[in-house]
Length: 205
Ligand SMILES: Nc1ncnc2c1ncn2[C@@H]1O[C@H](COP(=O)(O)OP(=O)(O)OP(=O)(O)O)[C@@H](O)[C@H]1O
Image 1 (spheres, rainbow, N blue to C red):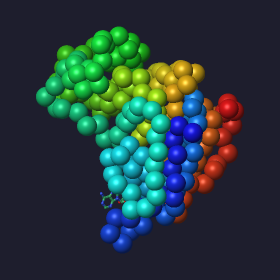
Image 2: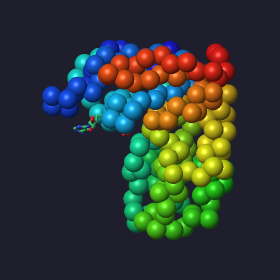
Image 3: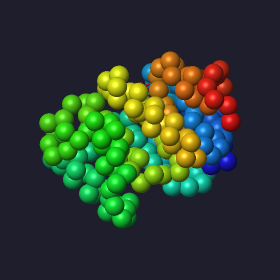
């Protein structure tokens, strides 16, 4: 297994959000986690990414990690191109070919040199996603990755997600909408602090 979650629990003060969450995801799998607002999806993904500590349980990730948080963590004053340069250094990437091609695919190129503070929510989200993908990580944790996307970009997102799966990457997508189920290998619903398997009609594997 590339991602193993064992009996994770988390509370904020007296509010128990995750009671007992376990999950095992293999290489080349595209997995969805859905749940109502406030069910704890972002909390779970933050714990998986290492951004937040769990009160109990364990998380094992075998490979490099890309995390696309629900709210973009971008520098308002920098342009998308400057973000690429910054993350190129952080990820120690020899070149930006992959990032450039994602730029084109998601339609970010026209906004290349505008400060982030002047960009729309959907455009910021594109940059947020590219930053998570540009080092081609083995495991991807995506929190509502297509929020604010127009239809064309939404479809581009799914092309990218399926390409990642074909390349053996493991992708976990969190959403409060369940209408993408046919695009997934497995779907789980987070409710009452637990993950429940839900029917998914996509590719098997
Ligand atoms: N840092 C925090 N401190 C206290 N409570 C928090 C904190 N973060 C989240 N919560 C609470 O924990 C619960 C789960 O929040 P979380 O953001 O994980 O849910 P979610 O399923 O991602 O929701 P949404 O679909 O609205 O994004 C909510 O009741 C939220 O108010």
